[in-house]
Image 1: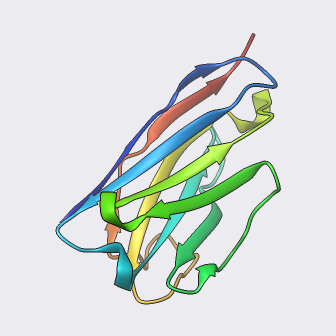
Image 2: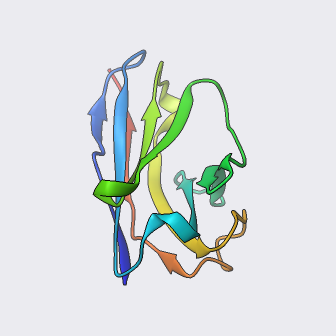
Length: 118
């Protein structure tokens, strides 16, 4: 089982990007999936999570999490991006309800790089 992120890249300030977290080896019905990010020189930050309850930990209005169970994919829609959003964005999954700790996740991805620059 694994989780794999995609969708990162270079985007201009004020732009939008949608990241995908595709899981395999398990179904989203019974797992909480979180998005994290880690900027250069900073600690990893928990952004938001979704589980069977819906949005367990909604983040800023600019970042919206959703999931498509049929596609085994969780999305992170990021709007009005600014240079401070530059980071490696990772997803992680845990059986049951959402948790915010990176170490406690059952499956952790390597991340996809997002760079916000003009």
